[in-house]
Image (tube, rainbow, N blue to C red; front, side):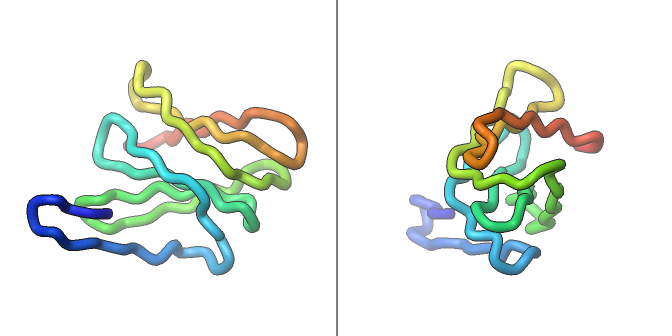
Length: 95
């Protein structure tokens, strides 16, 4: 993440090896979301605390693009499943 005020970058290492994140988006809270191309997980990062949570998806995926539906509370993550031509909605139980 780049902070234009300070000119500094901040990086976080995903908790699951070989996740290969491709795309990332912010929700309407303090979280950034990404999906792994190689490990069937989506990851939620709290950018204020650095805490990351991996969510295992129910089937084999290859995630490239992710998007967040901010019109609902709590926000929901949508990902495309390239291996099965489907959409997956992730609704975290905790916020």
